[in-house]
Amino acid sequence: MEKQFWQDYKSSFFTVPVVVVSVDGKTRPNLITLGWTGIVNSDPLMVGISVRPSRYSRDLLHEHKVFGLNIPNKALAAGTDYCGIKSGRDVDKVSELGWHVFRGRSLGVPLVEEFPVNAECQITQIIPLGSHELFLAEVKGVYIAKEYLKGNRVDWTTAEGLVYGSQTYYVVKEGVFGQGDSYRELKK
Ligand SMILES: Cc1cc2nc3c(=O)[nH]c(=O)nc-3n(C[C@H](O)[C@H](O)[C@H](O)COP(=O)(O)O)c2cc1C
Image (cartoon, rainbow, N blue to C red):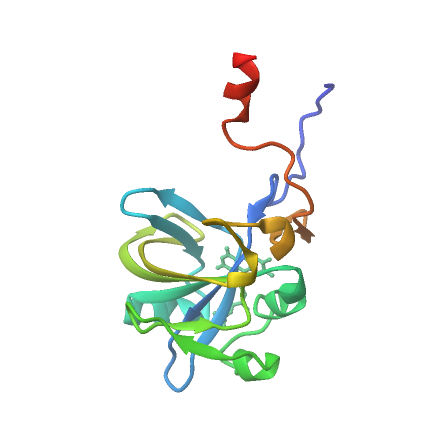
């Protein structure tokens, strides 16, 4: 592969997950779209989310110390984008989008019903990194739409999961290889 030194890589040079974080506000829950996020530990199961201090949601996260993680799919791409361009300072994103909030049974955090997967998260550490603050959080409960469950796994092709990169939302279309299948191939 011939490479060039890429001066203009901007902020996104590989695909990342995209999530919508829900957090209680003064009068209503707020939603914020985040690309700088991921699973960072298995036991306890932990996630990290990076939020700029200027975001309206940032102070709410500091105040409540808990949040909901809502994993979007193709049908929610436009709403996910909307939560990433509008501020909760100005609009009620949940009602603007016609979405519905339910409360998690472990932490009572607001979660959005329309999303195929939701998780309740408890913040354990906040680390200033520079432009963003990294919130590390333990996952305390997960909710999954039954229609996308295959055995005890989410079928992301049926769920039409999203990834983000190059300022574009992409949809998961095909599973091309199972984790660990290379062991089976090597044994042949
Ligand atoms: C695809 C996408 C990814 C984003 N990722 C982040 C992120 O990782 N961290 C962040 O602070 N803002 C991120 N943003 C910007 C916020 O979502 C945006 O500023 C939002 O309007 C803030 O909402 P709030 O003011 O209600 O908190 C992203 C926006 C989009 C569209």
